[in-house]
Amino acid sequence: MLDNLTLVCHLTVVSETENRTEKPIMTTGREIQLHRRTARFAGLAYLATAMTGVLSFFVIRPRLMVAGDGSATMVRLIDNESLARVGLVVDLALITSGIVTALLFYALFRKVDAAASMALAAFALMGGLAITIGTICSAKALDVALGGVDGFENASSLVLLLTELTDTAWSVGALFFGLWLIPMGWLVLRSGWMPPFLGWTLIVGGVGYVLSSAVEQVLPEATTVVELLTMPASIGEFLMIIYLFRRGTAGPLTTPGLATA
Image 1 (tube, rainbow, N blue to C red):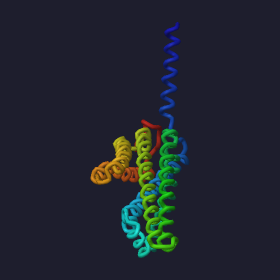
Image 2: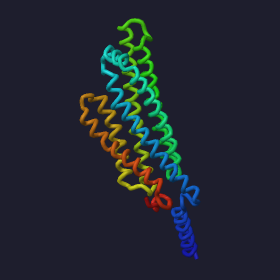
Image 3: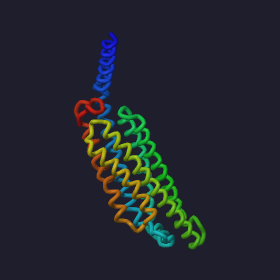
Image 4: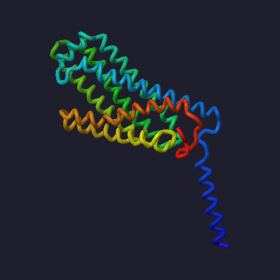
């Protein structure tokens, strides 16, 4: 009698587990369409974040900033005022697109793992806050260069301080943008509707980005090592954007572990 009761309880637990596993995340056509639309918008926002980040950090900033030389930086800011103002607009676009991306990722993955989705969004928002501080410093440096402080020597010293603060803010922002890749990769692995290799690439990329931030501070001359450490992150983010767009036109959606991309 006791054995029969144990068997019945065991079968009930197994049945309930299977039901939970096979229950679709979305059960209506409207929910599926919303998920696909969210994936597409997340891909667009992520692409905008990547493009504005590359434009600001690799194109505009090197033309305006001279490391360790406030006087030269000040001259460049004065001679390239229009470019400096475009850079501020690009930074604002980067911050805005980053916030939108964080919110869309949370909406997209919160049913997969709410805690990991919150961690992803929190890291992205913290990175955005750091970039915001850097943008404020850049704007003030431009004001100083254009005549905000009397005396060239005083102005150049202040410009140097502000640009160094900007660099520090970007370094902190890069750290958080590396950290957000780790929960992103975990969510990809849990979702079941993106390939596992993408999840692992994002996790490795996130760890590499964090390590690159440490190496950059301890060994500033080790630029090759930093580039190698950040390479998996770049690959993972590029693939993530592709799969987000692909997800926007994917087939039926099911629960983690059973969904197909």
